[in-house]
Length: 271
Image (cartoon, rainbow, N blue to C red; front, side, top):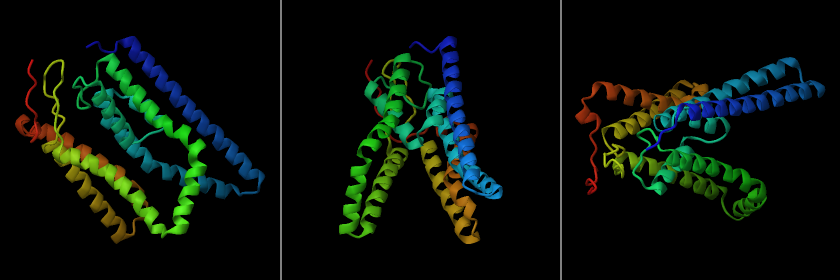
């Protein structure tokens, strides 16, 4: 498999810096315009300052989730591509699903558990991730008005709780797919090397799942019992980080036979 060379990595780094500069420049531009307009309509400096500070604090929690997503994808895709993707749009659910779907479509047995070194596979993943997140940006301006009218009709004719239940069911279904993969997912073999990828359900995936669930429950309990309202926005990213730390520790302390233990290893392909 042909891997990315130094020039290509340098180009990716430059592209990432360009994207970062564009996003940062756009943010600064609108911040300056907003502050200027606020002063024009008579909003006090203290109010503007408090608004900026609260907005900065509000973005910390989502940023932690973004950093966790970049770290989760970096072993297979490197730092630069996830950094470029998540500097603009995306989340761990969308990015991981898109990358996994692309790998399944390629069908060469590559896995997100290992570095993607094949240029063709890397390109396919990059395009699928980009197009998947760009599609809503095209559809929403065209179809949003019709979707809103449809939702209003449903809400007007039925209990609004039905609409909330449908949205919750869709989200739960999506999360359940990831949970099922962690509990009973089957691993795969690289079709070129016939080496097992160790990407199925096992000790590590179960440990990550249990740790994240327990951490989330504990953090939610702290929020409810001690009225720590600000912690509510940080609960999910903190649970993700805690699970990642636990997995890293297990990788260091467990013997290889336990660390790589999986319960649904398929038969090795015939070479």
